[in-house]
Image (cartoon, rainbow, N blue to C red):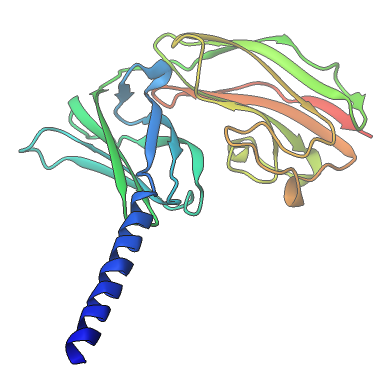
Length: 270
């Protein structure tokens, strides 16, 4: 009798283990594709600035964490590590970040690892070489506006606000932002950014048609649900649509963080 019970228990345990393994086998490891490193995928970053990194991530087991590691060959202690938990719980996402390359980092060839870990404990890593370079540059990019709204022009719900121009640089462009700002919010120009939730982002990009020159058009429909940030965000709360005086501000930086910005272009929302 005891032998029979033992055999039955062994059979049940083996069956449960088989089912468990079978279930685990159905969860695919995270997939990383369309990896871009550097502006225009040039695999270059400048010391004292940042590295543009973008990739498509699919994780059937749900993303837990994304880690970026930048290091030289064995023997060097220099390493840059950035960990991102904000994508946790998603099955797919566009990973788009800018990793700071600190002043004093040794120039040379590095390895960049992008690792995605899912909730099941599986991980996937992709690796590519990049070059970290010194850039002696104190000259900011040049901004030339092509079209701007007439000063004080009124817009109502459903109408499109647009502005366009060209930005050029002697070495390499870094980032571009076009923001719609409410005058009474009293936000300083320095604080107008893609992460400031009190502004409405009309355009935010680090992707350019060429490293040294980029023609842009930024537009947004009054009353739109989401902005045009790199990852579109809801227009609500602090930056909710309101009537009154606004202005458009265009600003950005080059690859060495030399900043530029436009004049303020005032408009009115009714």
